[in-house]
Structure formats: structure tokens, C-alpha cells
Image 1: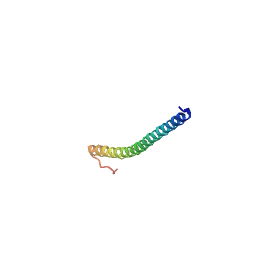
Image 2 (image 1 turned 30 degrees about the vertical axis):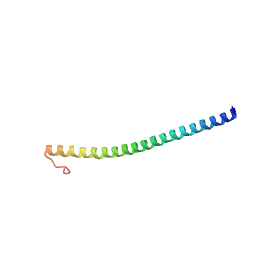
Image 3 (image 1 turned 60 degrees about the vertical axis):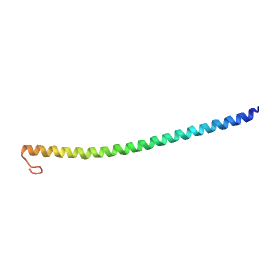
Image 4 (image 1 turned 180 degrees about the vertical axis):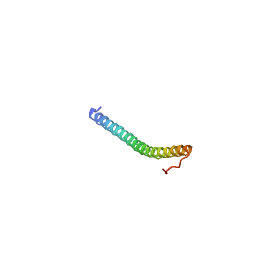
Length: 76
């Protein structure tokens, strides 16, 4: 058997395996990055919704309190 041929074939197989694993890893990293971007956008939207809802709740609480006290909001 010619050891040079075996060495070349085994090196080709190892290089192919290394390229395949590197490609798979890069694909997984890309997928994870996309998920992180979506999660960041979702958190930004949720924070904006919380701000709107929070201010609306405070306004409703003020109106309920004013109604219970018999006063009208916006007048002194």
C-alpha cells in the first residue's frame, strides 16, 4: 500500500470534515444572532407598550379618585 495516497485521502477527509463543522457552527451562530435581534425588538416593543399602559392606568386612577371625591379633573 502506498502511504502517501492514504495520507492525502485522509487529509482530504479531515479538511472536508473541518469545513463542514465550521459551516454548521457558522449557521448556528447566524440563527442565534437572528433570534437575539428579534428578542431585542420584542423587548423594545413591550417596553413601549408598558409605558403607554402605565400612563393610561395612572390617568384612569386619577379619574376614579376625582370621581370618588366629587371633583372634576383639570379644574382648580
